[in-house]
Length: 290
Ligand SMILES: [Zn+2]
Image 1 (spheres, rainbow, N blue to C red):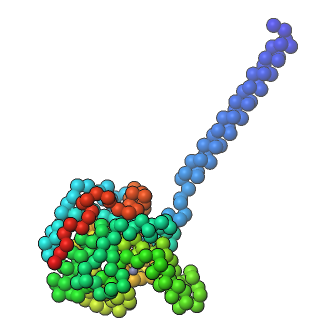
Image 2 (cartoon, protein in one colour):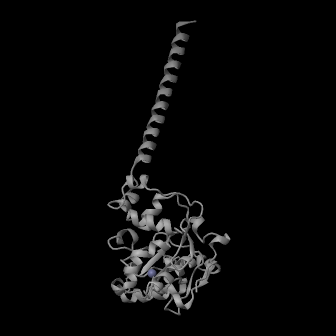
Image 3 (tube, rainbow, N blue to C red):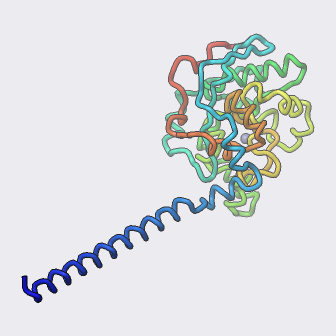
């Protein structure tokens, strides 16, 4: 081998080695950047959780997938499954699809007159029906005149309420939306919640409210828009608005002191599964109380 050729080989090796180390450096740099991005705190999540639920709370909380039915017999003799729940999250940031308003109709059932005090809106989601009627029956059996005032509302009804609120807010839609949700962003559009007796601050001073604070979780309902959680829910404190989430879910939510927004962050939550509810017969109201 000539000197010239040996030099050429060495030069080629040096060249290959340089390229290889450059490539390695680039790969390492990409890896570092990817890891950094992955570990960066999600600012939105952090701000939502800040001051309310720590990461320890989340990891130690016993949030599990629904199990076998676990029955609870109410004071009026109705059997309710404690494990059944509906966690569909609806708020200003999580609107319902446009066709929900039409599709949900087949899941709605009529609430009997003795459980309500409003003839304009009378329907509730069938998944919620056994729970809400059992709750109202139990309150009434305790001598408390709890009544469903506003359960399911369609988009058109919601729009009338929203436009009325916009007028009250001098045309400020954003301000109006903190009091009355826009159509498709209200829980009332799902049929999974209800306002009781009146949609008014005066409800907080009633025995109905006191009864709900003590008993609603036994029927799967939570106070959906609590005081001092307005920044998380995006809605003002509403003593009259209660949301069905399921008995065990409601008890856990109250125990943790969290909102539905925070609670579903702890769950492996898929809104698509929860969109309309369980199609199985078990979710149909079987027990109509008299
Ligand atoms: Zn409401």
